[in-house]
Length: 70
Image (cartoon, rainbow, N blue to C red; front, side, top):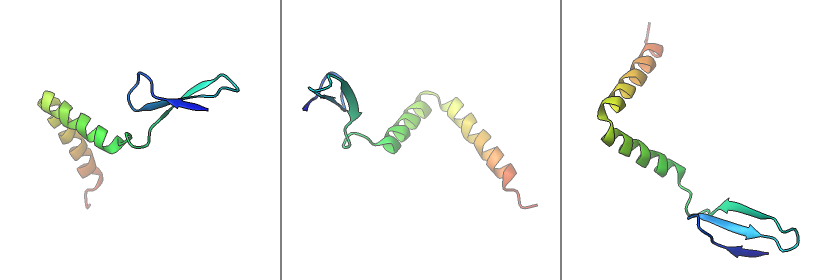
């Protein structure tokens, strides 16, 4: 089995010489989903501050409504 890195960054392509199939699997070092999501949200909030504020207000309203003490 040979392992080579091709065009897509962060993916390793493994090809098996016996079956002739090729699969892609992510490399463990490049996967950081929490950091990627946080970076995306920060970038979105900087580009669309009004929309981000409306989302925060809406989520806060619903959470506060569901957690009301009475």
